[in-house]
Length: 95
Image 1 (spheres, rainbow, N blue to C red):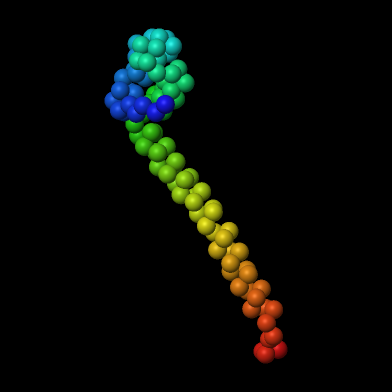
Image 2: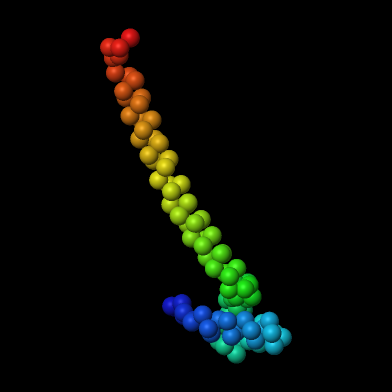
């Protein structure tokens, strides 16, 4: 079963039916042929002002980037420490 993608305008209109018109979430979801859980997720996102949503998007992007770096830096540090240990285990002519 494939996931259906909805345009942002469609999502906003669905959220408005619940938040502004006061219609029950279950009724709106059933009428639109979608799950209640998806509609609740849209309400969580689209009930915020657009400026706040943009800040949240920027924050999410930064968190994903940090996650990628978190995988990169330990490997780099391990390689650097290994190189230092190898260099230190070699005979030292400076002493």
